[in-house]
Image (cartoon, rainbow, N blue to C red; front, side, top):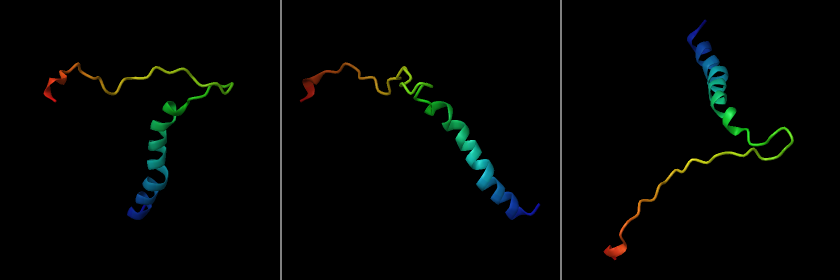
Length: 55
């Protein structure tokens, strides 16, 4: 196989397959009946109690 063929196979076949593996399980948001799937949300930010005396 030539180098350009390997590059094209990697770009058009292997790279999209590798990217799809990450997207598929996380994107299922509907059940088989079409109802939303209940999910637990992770908090991204935790607000620390702070002092407002600095104003």
